[in-house]
Image (cartoon, rainbow, N blue to C red; front, side):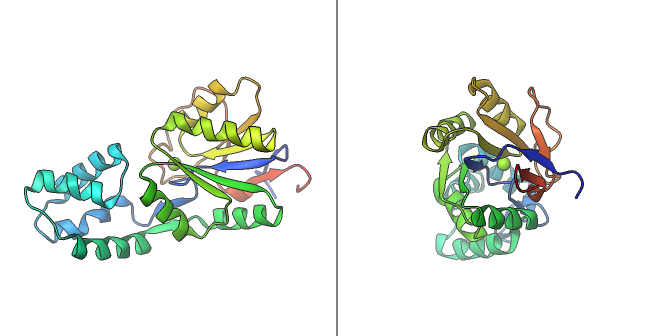
Length: 218
Ligand SMILES: [Mg+2]
């Protein structure tokens, strides 16, 4: 097989969630539907979505932001089931991620999600993905990802692989990882908002997680 990237067999794998293993079918814009059909313009609903993203997106934060602009409240018991249907219909796991995670499980490799955002919402999405993993850590800022990667190093030893679609996160890990114990891998996903973002450091790049091959498996 071509384009494989062969790296040292890691003691554990850390992995981001959004746009590394999952994406939104048809983009995130359809999230405004429950509100556009209730008199809010799509533009306003997207502005509220971005404001919610900055606070750590989840439905209740999103509702707060929409209500701030709209000036009237929405019934949680009506919006919540609609939102959950939207999640089930829209959030998809990349097929290569399913294969890679399944393979890593057969290798008894510990895989840990390290993801940014609202805890409840992130854990919900991870559970829905059904990807086999050991733990999931939800952090409130990108820099905090290093804390958990460092814990993986302490618990399992080096090297550890860490995969993310956001170059800034990978760069920060390179800055912190003085001993060079983390293999940073950039998931090149066309759907990622960071797809074209520049990186300060060199990271391995894969467009498909099954192309990341560990020594001995090649
Ligand atoms: Mg991401």
